[in-house]
Length: 484
Image (cartoon, rainbow, N blue to C red; front, side, top):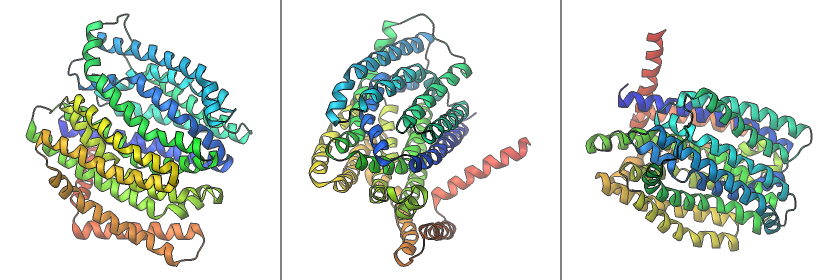
């Protein structure tokens, strides 16, 4: 299988996994949003910061280091596995004994028991990281797709059943733990790798030398992305945090999924051609054009339908989440571009520069956080968007220097896609300004208008990114027909 086939196969199965898994999460989330209150979602949101930070420290950048290393041994894998497991157990007990302090911080007594139970996910994930890394390194997303689907469906059924039985917020806890447990169990059952009884100090030192910088970078980025949950939970009500959490989950349906797909597939693929500058730049340009076309279209379209979508899917009690969702769509549309630019630093082995950029960017984000505390959630999210624009120029400047791909050239490559998506989203938003129908009818009209305008424009203007995706899909279906 050549590089293009590997890339397409990886993208296909990673896309299927993210789409199907998040589709299940989306449907389950809608059902749970109708069964539970915004305050109950807010309680879980309050713990998001602590779980995310702990998870970032457990991985410690070793996954990226293993993927980048060309020839990994069993000693490498086993060393990382035992380290992850030890750190996972350590951080679970830290959270366990910090439960009282966390509960007092938010003035929410119920969090005391919630964090001690939800924290078990750290131990479960520490068993799972290495298995997922091996499959990702081998660009084997097909198996991960099947496992993720089984885990998502099963955990969704468990959560909905518990919510219907009146377990409240514990249904959300059960969903998270059961999903990760089933996912881990199946990865161990289906993957051939098992650890050997060895911890190689030299291997640890080599991998940690590269991964430690990524760990600190990831920790800074994770802190920035999740500190908003902590701030809103502390300075606003649990219901407000529930609205923000739900809006964030809706926006992540596209932004985080696209980013995750691109990160998982582009990194191992581009690493294989890291010493071929022309091929690297050519593949990188194609990835950016196609990725940002998809991101701009989906995120701006979601912003256009935010209000009727919220009303139709989860009801009037969640209406305050709509303006948060619209703003978060603008924030999230650039996430995939950040991921690609930062991935290039890792491909080139510049984890030191990666860390420096994270420190600079997150220092610039501090005013955004402080203003949000004083001015309110919507102003804070607007600040997040402005910060995202600044981060793009910082990221792209340095990645451009490593591969002769100037910022102006990047902008020229993505600007047509942005203008296309902006016009399309304006057409989609237009009916909601003048029609006074039921939300479900307005949403239906917006979707129809969006589809019609989209297909007219891509065929009239022959958008390169669309033509590339169309060709890939055509090749895939043709290959299936030949095989059949």
